[in-house]
Amino acid sequence: QKEAAKVKVAEEANKAIAAIDKATTEDDVKTATDAGKLGIEKEAAKAEIEAAKAAKEKAIEANAELTPEQKEAAKAKVAEEATKATAAIDQATTKDGVTTATDAGKLGIEKEAAKAEIEAAKAAKEKAIEANAELTPEQKAAAKAKVAEEATKATDAIDKATTKDGVTSATDAGKLGIEKEAAKAEIEAAKAAKEKAIEANADLTPEQKAAAKAKVAEE
Image (cartoon, rainbow, N blue to C red):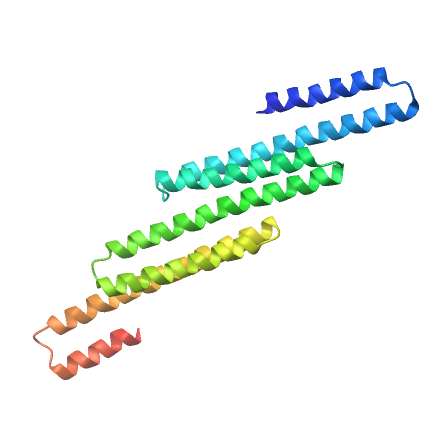
């Protein structure tokens, strides 16, 4: 990637030098110089986008909680953001325009990778809830619905973020929310197991059972 980017930058520099050599007025020299600098700027920006894309694709691929299908979908979204950014960079007519397109592209890539993280956290907790033998099918469905709700809230917050820090904050908050709901399901399962054990204890009177179960619920 680095070599390819350097070749592109060198190509733009050579084009600019050739245009400067052919210039017959001072204005022509300035035009050729500005165009050359902009071309170099664009190629360097596209290399930045390519690097951001590659880094996030690698992170997605390494996430063991995602299925192969989820990985492919997430990487496709990242690639889509990179393509959009490259097109916007190509269309830019000023250095500021290139910077704006680059920043927007990197943020878009960041968002898609963050949404994949949320999807992975959701999938992991749903799997854990499903595997918990102490939960009834109804309790499992309710817990998974809560986890999905937190994931949706996080995805919305990521979409609305306008900075990388905003994306990070939304991702962290979402993962914490998912964690909390899964933890509450674990507590519910532990409570159910203890209540079952109390109920099965033939040495306890109905009153003692009720008192013991009340204590468990209190905890």
